[in-house]
Length: 470
Image (cartoon, rainbow, N blue to C red; front, side, top):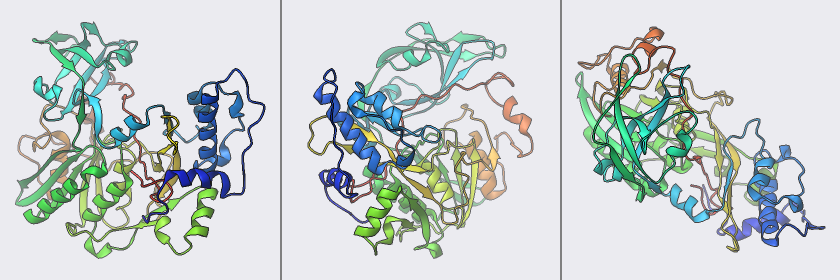
């Protein structure tokens, strides 16, 4: 996307003046500090101009709101918007988008043992290399049920899993849903880490074909060169099929998603429409007036990519965490190739957001409002729900990622080659009952807790007004 302008300072100017409207604030409540009011005005002005659903915003006087976070929350169109958010740590937000975060280095998923019990267990999905979790010996498939000697329950899990320093008690889940503790316990302390979104990339030989496999956990622009190298390696290997594992990817940079999609798409479709971008009326009018001949503002096309794999189909592995930019590399390619989705229904976020902060740096607050809806070329998606898989699977953890016997990867290899990997459990599309019986948790007793993850941002910083989208 072409740079529409260079500084966010100019964006604030546009917000106030480009529509010919100047907001006057009067009768300030003397009990509300001036510093809070300035933050409220910052919220109001930017939301009123750029928020995708600004026509749905309630008329709330910012002079009477003592809490900026609550004020921001009141402005959201909650009938649809589950994603816009505000923070008082702008720098921390930027670091998070760059892959820098305080973490112990592992991802997990929580389960309630039964409908009649409050007991909760967690299964480790993956461990990032060279992190506290990795150094402590944790691995995919480890199950934990206590933190600091306290059993996890539906009442306390949110508090316990949010600790920076803690001790995990691992265990084995028995058939009767009792747990056998394992020794030793694992001590962990979170550190500020730079997380590589490329967890694993490899090429496996299966049924006489070479299949590329990529576990990609976040769309981070700082790692675009590394992503290009992976696809270059796949191309050099002459892969016949591709599996992109997006089970643990909750989104990120739209431009990186466009890059990945362009490297997967059939080469003959280079230059065709990948995304149609819809904004609110304020932004639409502004863009059309200032850049009447620049169609890239409203349309993103499949890029010419040197490492394009020129595939006719690929497999995407998904879970309920798969969201935003991750969904984008699935639904934007559907008009051009056979995309086989294996796993769970995705989150259902087809909108992009931007990071807006004070250009004068008078405060450290920032908002991340939705400003755009991203539609595929034929507008064929049901934007009210997540993407429904072609083959529905439930997560298991007994094999490492990349092992041909790992449930999702095994299914992907079968879909691409027609041959089941040796030792893998056969999963037929019609055998829905197997989805329950194959899991660690018994049928009827595997109610999953809402996964606690950071609010991901499919931040497409309209690179002109917003200094570049993430």
